[in-house]
Amino acid sequence: MKPKDFPYITPLDPYAERPALPNLDGVYATPTPGPAKASEKTVIVRTALTIEPRDGFLYVFMPPLARLEDYLELVAHLEVAAQGVPVRIEGYPPPDDVRMGVLKVTPDPGVIEVNVQRPRTGARR
Image 1 (spheres, rainbow, N blue to C red):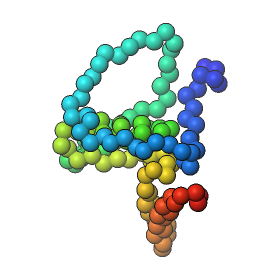
Image 2 (cartoon, rainbow, N blue to C red):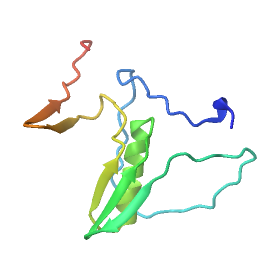
Image 3 (tube, rainbow, N blue to C red):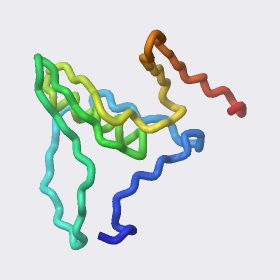
Image 4 (spheres, one colour):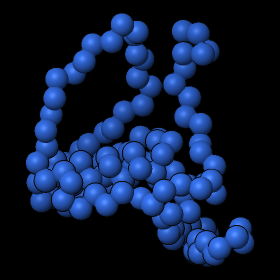
């Protein structure tokens, strides 16, 4: 495999201007699977979505994704596919993006560190 063929995920600039996030409520009410299209180029998959039903929950190990829109769309599809079974998301976090608020809790020995994303205000960054 040549280096140019490796499926690198290049993070986007989290502060670059982007449109509002799409509203995914009700968009995926019924899954519509379509036939897979064959491609002339060989595609090598290096990441995978892992799903495991366990203790009444559907545990989903998310793959790394470059765009927040792709992450949210995947979560919307998972909710439809779960058919009411509670979903627990594990694995890679959503890509950094100022359009989504973040609360991170990090347990350290003897300390619990809580990080809250500062809200984006006008031209200040």
